[in-house]
Length: 308
Ligand code: G3H
Ligand code: 13P
Ligand code: NA
Ligand code: ZN
Picture 1 (tube, rainbow, N blue to C red):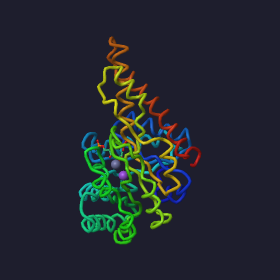
Picture 2: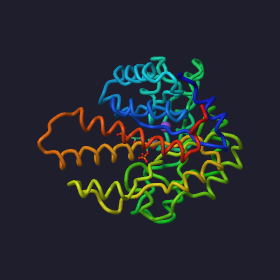
Picture 3: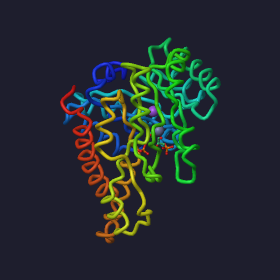
Picture 4: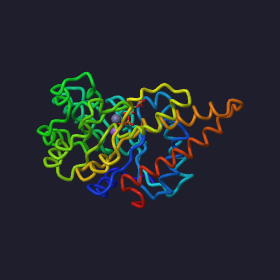
């Protein structure tokens, strides 16, 4: 059953979080829906512009509709992740999405407000919910000084005005996480003081955490043992920090990197261990099963199991 994420967030706020998972392939869609149904856990399927370029929007939406027939008890919402105006308006027009993200976070405050608001106005005409972002996530990296790092975090003093002016329904914040497999290069972790300040100014308002992958070290080692060459400094968000963030109003945890690492590990091990085989169905099956297991564990961690 397809449900608005607004309902998800009303139910989960302060208690558990919704996994928002980026999908690119059939195996991922099937693994996700299978896990959601098995765990009775609500979830968000996310489509990025890169995924739309890769698989075509019709194919992605078609796979999601098909998965929903195959797993009729799955309760999910369809989200456009990291859209610009073009993606957002296209998604609104298509009637395929329950929510969209307009990512204008690299603009200055006023620019971000203006661009976000324009999308909110159109989206709300169709009851589509909008996620906006304030603060710069991707820049929180090694080569920045402490001052530069702090400038990129979401400024709590700005959040209330931003939400009031834009009318957005949820807010993605920069509180230390970043996309990809090399997070927290400075070793800082999630900035809970900032999260607490944000929550004080936006009580009961759903907060979104991008860059939510755990980047398991064991997974990196397995990839490298099977011929991969990932930097051993790869690291993600500690599971206990994710859990802790829920009490601070984090309702949606975005996950993509972990599912890519899993894909890489499964396929590298398949090629290493069975060089005589040449059948995509075999590693595909393993990937789906491992993906499902990964999601079942994630739903448990987020407290979402049994919440349907
Ligand atoms: O931020 C979300 C995804 O990790 C972006 O990945 O640009 O390859 O779709 P993508
Ligand atoms: P990860 O790179 O941590 O998986 O983050 C994904 C994300 O934020 C998608 O929007
Ligand atoms: Na998003
Ligand atoms: Zn993101």
